Structures are given as structure tokens and as C-alpha cells.
Image 1 (cartoon, one colour):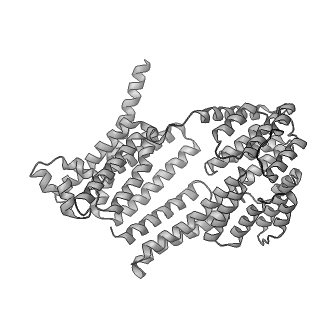
Image 2 (cartoon, helix red, strand yellow; image 1 turned 180 degrees about the vertical axis):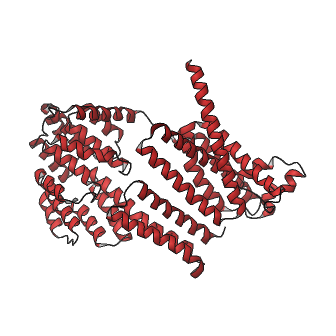
Length: 517
């Protein structure tokens, strides 16, 4: 496939997946999401029109447009997370970069707000905020909120949050949790935390919200575990602040006082924040409702689970990495032997050709063809898909079942295409690539997600299932545009993956039942 076609189809597919994700997560009602939908639609329109009007560069234009679409919100999220963790200089830097890529008044004002936090004193912080001009009502409310944060006016923060439009910016949930915690409104704090568990909420920000809730409810050990689990995210001052808050809420003020008095290398702003905490202890956590106690027990259990060391990457998905290494090794052999896009080179190394397999009985080509690729773009697209799908299936079904699905699914795909060539359903063609095996993994994970949803009927399961269906629909739409052999290989691989997943899951359940009995 030509480079520009590959880039355009990749950009359009990612934009379509982004659109599907917005609707599946129920975010389409938010103003920022509507802007993102319009931009994604523009990228897809560029893909459709570009091949006709500017075919030499349309793929590059679509990819550049996609980067400009996705990078600013990702950078903005990274900046907000850094700010919440106390890394104000880093946060301002990320937001300034986002404002360069998307130079809107809203983004520039957000960058200026985060830059104001880098000032050493509350007075300078407020003065910097006064210089920011914002015409948007939500932006003005955000600046008013920042002024109250600078002087620790938590009751004023509560009033400002009540006046804000819902979903204005993601960190408002964290600010609300702290404001309600500082003012002793535990019930409202818990209500503010509940949206943090929704699928659309950034998981890193949820972890931060978890620390705040546990701290204001006096769960000292759980706070320490959570801070330890996310040690690289937080500044020393942040850890001191929330550990001391948890001690104060647990009526252990003497320990909190000694902790806050511990010498440490802090900036002037950080020391001011800790001094304020020492002078204004967190309210004691008393009279917690049964529902709150249950939520806290669940959050404490999460901190224990998160404390379990995560396996290193090669241990978490060893088979996926080995398969990627195998594909890379074969491609290196292609480069060393000759031109990877040359049919002579591919045939010599084991590509599937009907006469060679049937007439000359070279059945080994059904296997070797799965590890050969017709050029760098072909290799990279399959490696990316294998990296995503391989880890999902391996973590869900184990390495042995993943190997069976990948190997048998790939063989079924190759054999099916070979049979159609022999029956003259399609024209004979030199066939290479891991696409059939990868689509077998796709079929397996789709089957697993469907089974999980039918078992649990949960909202998260339904959203996972809808996302799989959306990605599958987009991929097969792209395949219709691609050559016929590719479409058949993908379809046969997907069908084989579905069948293998059903067989392996059924045998796994039967084996487990027998072992229990």
C-alpha cells in the first residue's frame, strides 16, 4: 500500500475510534467533546477528499491534523495531573506546549493559570491571576477558584464549585473533594468522589482522589500505602501534606505536628502550604455513615492490591514480545537478503504461493509466510496491532492459549486463502504477513468480552463490548478498501479466533470443574 494511503487510512481509523469512544463513554454532551467530534469528522472528510484533490500529500496532512487534535488534550491532562501532584513547574510547561499546538484563548488562559501557581507566595499567585483575561464564563469561574485556592478559602471554593457548570474541567472533582474535606462535609466529599469511578474519568486522577478521600477520613495506613504505590508521582511536600492530613483526621495531631516539623528541602510555596496545614488541622473523621465506611473499606482494599509488585514487561506478556521479536528477526533477514518488497526475496524466504505449496508440497510456507512482511509499513502496522491485542489476550487467557490462537488462527487464515485461490474464487497472489494470526487474537478478545458481558451485564462490560464492536467495524471497513486477499485473510483469521476462543474457554471451564469435583 502506498505511504500516503497508509497514513490516511491510519488517521481516519484512529479518528473514527476516537468518535466511537466519545459516544460509548457518554461524553458527547460536553462542549469540548463536541469540538473533538467536529475535528475528527474533518479528518475523515480530509481522507475521503484528499485522495482526489491532493493525492501526493493527503496522508501526511491527515496524520498531522490528527496529531494536532489528540496532542493538546493529552498534554492538558498530563499538565493537570502534574499540578495536582505538586509539580507546578512541569505542569505549566506541559500546558504551554498544549497552547502552542492549539493556540486558543481558552488554552492560553489555562497555561497562564498553571504558571501562576509557580509563584513563591500567595500574594504573587493572586496577582498573576489578576493579569489573566478570560471572556469565557467557565474560565472566569476557574480563575476565581484559583484565587480562593491561593488563600485557602475553602468555603469560598465550595460556593464557586456550586456555581460552575458540570464537567468544566476534570480536576474540579479533586478540588471539590478537598474543599468538602477541609470544611468537614464528608457526605458531599463522598458524592464528589463517586464520578471518579466512572469509565471516562482518567485513572491517574482517580488514584489522586482516592488519596484525598482516605486522608480526610483518617485512614493513615491506607494513605501511606497509596502514596508508596505512586511514589514517583508525588513531591515530598505532597506526601507530607496528605500523611499529616490523615493523622489529623484520625485524631493523632501530635504525630502530624512532628511530621510537619521534619526538616526537608522544600520550596517557599511548599513550606507555606505545610505551615498552613499545621495551623489549620483537618477536621476529625467522626460519625461516618455505613455507606461511607463500606466505600473506605473498598478503597483500602484497592491500596493493598496496588501494593502487589507488578511483573516486569517481559514477564507480563512474554509470548507477545517473543512473537514481535520473531517478526522483526524475519524482517531483518529480508533486508539482509535483498529488497523486502521484492516478490523474489519474499518467495525465496518462504512466502505462500499456491503452486509451490500444492504442486511442490512446500507446506512449511503456511508457517513462514506468517512471519514475512512486504515492506516496513506492513511490518509496523502488524507489530502495533500485535502489541495491543497480544497483551490483551495473553493477560486474559494465558500464554499457552494465546499461542494456540495465534498459531492455529494464522494457519487457518493462510490455508483458507490458499483454498480460495485453488478454487479460483480469488486470483492467485503471493501472500505474506501476520494479519490473519493477529485477527485471530482480535476474534478471541471479542469473544471473551462478549462472554464477560453476558455473565456480568455490567456497565463497564457493555462499554468494553461496544468499543470492540466499533473497532471491528472500522477495521473491516478499512479492509474493504484494501486488496481482496487482505480482507479474506483478516475475516478467516477472525472467525478462527472466535472458534478457538469458544473451544479453549469451554475446555478450561470443564477442566476447572473436574478439578474442583
